[in-house]
Length: 203
Image 1 (cartoon, rainbow, N blue to C red):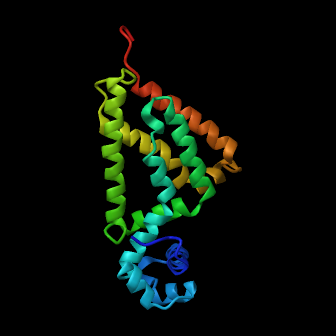
Image 2: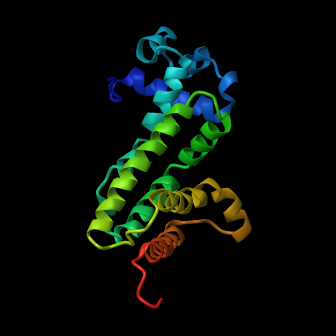
Image 3: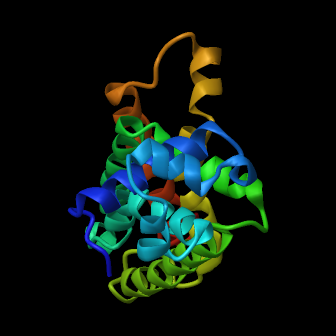
């Protein structure tokens, strides 16, 4: 396991992020990344093995704040959905490179980084299913709720506003600032909580 506090390692990851966001994956060379980082190209082989290894590690380190949110216990109660979304939106707002990177990785489809995205989604799937079972057991949500349906609804409400942020802002003629995103998180949290609630007799 490499240490992000290692200055050469950290510079290579930062340079890789800048290069991969600026150009298509196949056009970015390890030489260009090493030059931007002020490092010897051999350090890429030493730390990451090759360009693909560097790309995947760059994705992993860049999205670490998002992974930390995913692993938190914030959603142990239905009321935590809005707070989770608020923290997610705020993290993405403060780091505009995150949604851009995700879109770049998804655009590659079968290219490098796809494996990591699949692992991330599977991590969310298994973790989400486990939390949902806990919510069902505590009587907070409908026992008949399909975990995959709940997960897709949640991912849609979380990711779509940030992936299409530029388009939404252009349509609105204003910025999706902290206050706007707090309001959006509160509403989406309520929508999810209401959708997952136990159906009342006669409802």
